Image 1 (cartoon, one colour):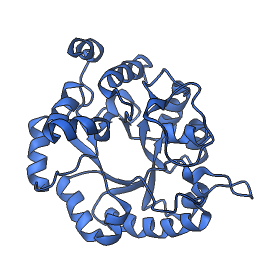
Image 2 (spheres, rainbow, N blue to C red; image 1 turned 135 degrees about the horizontal axis):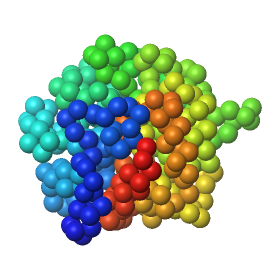
Image 3 (cartoon, rainbow, N blue to C red; image 1 turned 30 degrees about the vertical axis):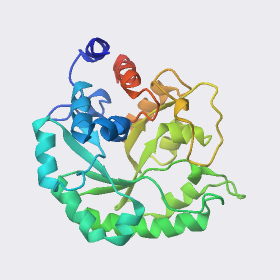
Length: 287
């Protein structure tokens, strides 16, 4: 396995101390640490960080301080491995409970972005426009607090936000319209957009000034779409370039709308096999 990783990632390290221009996908490519969740649970978080470096990454998202570690101590562990934490995830409930503490933690971690990836709602019922309006009100308040600290707040849709309304729109449209662009940005997860029946390139173009981050994740050919649950089997997550997504179109549109950071997230049962293949494919596009 190690030989395969070296062969596929030998072109150049993914990321460096100074990022490449924003138009370069490969130069702003990082790893969402959730991809290595099993390794972190079985072998410890330090092992997961080591693996991120072994896979060639210099930038990561998520993976905040483990229990018992301060932001400064965790930052030292990242620095020792030449890893930069670009974006940190927070649970919706965490920001409801202690926004000030979250802002302090994000500042101490020296991240440029924070993101929320799930709005609590009754999963036995559709996510509604009213749910979206309530979330948008929270997002505006949280985004203003993070912006005051020099950090961009982003929301990561999971697919339930794209259920069509009777009038032809979606709760995601409500979220975009009801949030202040100065305070709230979005992170497009390509897998979950396609899973919900969306064309990710068209979605980027529809709201060209609202996206800053992307999860680069492919969906298996033949996997059902038009589903609004935000849940799918891990086996539907396949190496980038082998699934349903027209990646050249999506990534060209992402560059056009100013996506700044691209994070590979692999939720499959075989991330260590899939991630190098995904990286090699992305590099092959020359974007």
